[in-house]
Structure formats: C-alpha cells, structure tokens
Length: 266
Image (cartoon, rainbow, N blue to C red; front, side):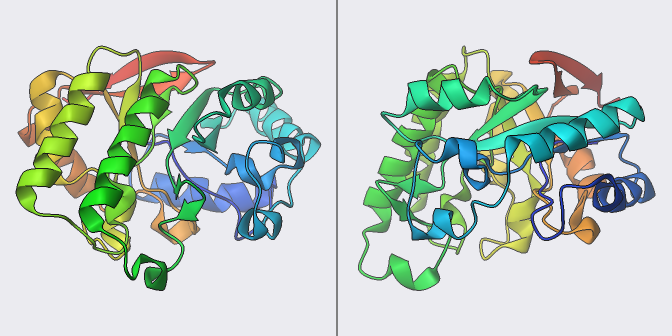
C-alpha cells in the first residue's frame, strides 16, 4: 500500500516530525509514503495566488524543504517528496516556474479555489450558492488542471463535496463522466483519497460510483489519505484496497523523479 498525499503543516518540516507519519504508515502496513506540502505555503509561490487566507499560512521556504528532502534521502527512508499545487487558471506559467525550483518526485494538482472562493474553508460560505453551478465550474476547472500538463496526479477529484453538498444524482454523474472522458487519455493519474471519509462528505474522493467507472475505463490511480495528523495516515486503507480490487483495479501507481511506476494489488 502507498499513501502519497499528506501534510506536515500542523508540526514542522523536520525528520523527527516526519518519522511520526512514517511510523504510523508502517503500523498499518503501508510500504511507502509521500509528503506533499501545499505550494501556497512557500514564499516562492506568492505570485501564483494571494489572499488573506494564503498570507496567514505562507510560512515555509524552499531552503527548509530542500533540507528535509536531503536528510531523508540520505537516510534512505521510504519517502517520496512532492507538492500539492492549487490549479489557478491563467497562472500556468508561474506555477510551472515555481515547481521547477523544487527537486520533486511528483506534483499533485488540486482544485480548492473557484475564482477566489475557497469552497472547503467555511460551510457558511456556501450560503446562497447554486450547487449545480458550483459543481459544473469545479469539474470544468479540474479537467483544465489535468489538461495543463503541470501535474502527475490530480488530487481528490470530487472534493467539491467536502461539506456534503451535492446536486441531483443525474447531474453529478453527467459531470463526472464528462470529466473522465476528457482525462482518460491524458498522462495523468487520478487520486483515490480516503480523507473524504473524515470530512463532512463522509465518502471517498472520488465517490465510489466514480471510482468504479475509473476502473471500467482503465484510468490509472494512486491512493492517499490526505493525512494532516500522523494518526490519520492510511485511514481505512485495508478496506479501501479490498474495495479497489473488487471494483476491478489490478494495480496502483506511484511516481518517483516525475516517472510513474506501478504496484500490483494482487
């Protein structure tokens, strides 16, 4: 099992704190993990996207992350290093420039912002919004992220349901299918993220129906918990991996030095 999406932001970018995540991974049978700080937390990314929320959390520097990477690689620990980068339409070249500063194994591209609105920050900010319109904009933006060529993995597709908002089943299925048709032939991996089970959605991101459709279409997947605490690493992974095999997946993907590899589910 591989858990390729986790954050150290509640602690420090240090080997000591990272080892708490790694120890938890070993406890639940995970053979390798990936650390993926949010790109917006780095000063070098200030020109990509900026608001009060980002400003209050922009506390990391490139040098700090480079030091952690160097120490962990020297110790030969089973840890890959990436970033979770917000896809902001129109800022593709600046995202590309900043990502090139980091010696990464992979980049997760995610959508958390729709024209400056952070849909997973506050439940109250959904008041008065059209859920169908929000979903339509989300999946269009997510498809553009996949098509941008910036990312190795598309993070938690379907996290627009973070607080539990959903349109009618017919529209949700139509939007998901249109998204999958656009990305099916792209050289990008879609993440199956158990962290949604711990959010208001109480469901995988993507939801099981969409994951089963991904299996039918042969879309490659990675697995992730989106852990922000050591105790959440590999959340529900034994059950998740059994489900993935039942739904028809034969393998999962990892990425090292921006090159994809696969691990058998058998």
